[in-house]
Image (cartoon, rainbow, N blue to C red):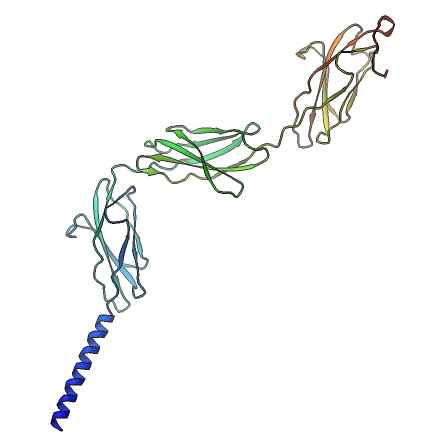
Length: 329
């Protein structure tokens, strides 16, 4: 009986010790795994994000950063971090930094420190991002970009463009200190969006603001003249000038001059709503050469180019051997 009691006590004590040891072991949270910056990496910013891999039993984290691998010269020690990353500030250029992370569970028990990782900041930093980008339409098929250069260490500016809701792509790269660019050969009546960033030895800057503009609609085609035909001999001073009507045009303008440069105008009319114009009887004279042209205007106010100029000569019928080819008005 005594032997049985002793054996029972020994087994019970062993079970208690084993259970306690197992519970103590299970209560230690998993050690975080360092992710980035990668060990030995060079970083091009003085405000890097330190990231690590968390486990399900991790509640909070602590991070240490030091100027030496023994962590005897701490420059940062932060506890109670709830996210698996930490944004560091206040670093120096061209300096090596060592870091490690531990995890804590809800019982306040800490894991072992992660493996030591280190990175080095570069002596150069990326340029500052350009600011106040604007896009303005000046001519058909063209958009003018302007921006402010906020850095003194860029090598180039990279200009990216997209159409509508499409993806951005690189249009061109410009030399440093340039603050404007004209984008040409664009499609009419199309919305383009732009963004730019500076490029330096240490990498790219952040993007500028986005700027958008819509190119002008296609230009109006010049009206096509009808009568009197070019090089006509007319035997009346009360001519009706005619041209083909265009559905895109709501108004027309006409010019008649004694020279093909239209410097000496005898008729200059605008806001005509018909596709013809009756020349006043006192505007023309006999045995004279005249040049004429027409242009149109759309309902939105867009004005076409002038038509190709035609010309005619006035000559009394009784004195001419030529046929007019035009009806008297």
